[in-house]
Length: 324
Image (cartoon, rainbow, N blue to C red):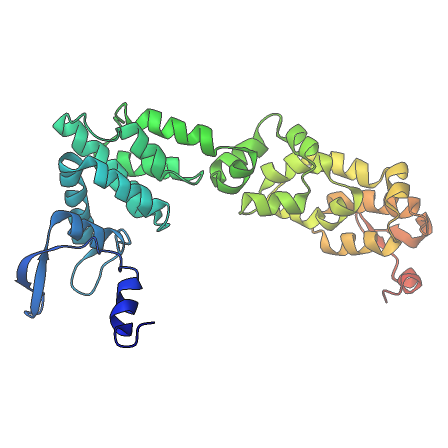
């Protein structure tokens, strides 16, 4: 049993610390004139990449200057050391979870190697595919490329994006990451109403999915699959959105249909509330009829209004519904 060599034995058993990937290439001065170190290109790219939030400025460097420095380093190392650069971009998107920097880096990797006609190292297609991990990222990469280099997308980028699309696109990813314009196009297509009905989409779910206001087209697509109570609650919304008279006539026919009223089991005060809050007179007569067909309603609870076709509910009868 050792008595005097304990410390040295413990130090020998301790695992060696991992080596840093950062290497100094000489001494230099910092931005404020203090002592600093020069870095070799790989170390400089590593330090910049793991702290690079694209387009964001730092205390001593503008966002544009940082982006230009990052792009220049990636382009240089994509030709000089493609295997290391491809590995960095993959880990940057994977383990470091940095989306934008890895997408920009992949685009610069491809551009530099195409310009240099380089064929060694990991393929451009593989690098593009490995940095795309979410369903909205293929579009992000293409948007960056077209904004930076124009609409002529080179061939290596297309199959890389196609590989990612086949891997990432599904029904759930479409629902989560599809753009607002595409979502609204699905709803307003000629068969939009049938699609919503088959999917069982309620108007509440549709409003949340569109992530925007429910305009006339959206309402007209979902109205065929709405129930009687939902129609009553949204008469005012239909008017404010500008739903067409043709669709409004179908709504009026449904809410005043005797069988639909009986199935809905709505209390009479629901029809009174709908009348009070709907600004258009096109709902007055259908609501009168619906009240007459409701289980606890009859026609003598309404009286003619001052104009032909206009009716108002009798105030003398409102006490029966606890609304006075």
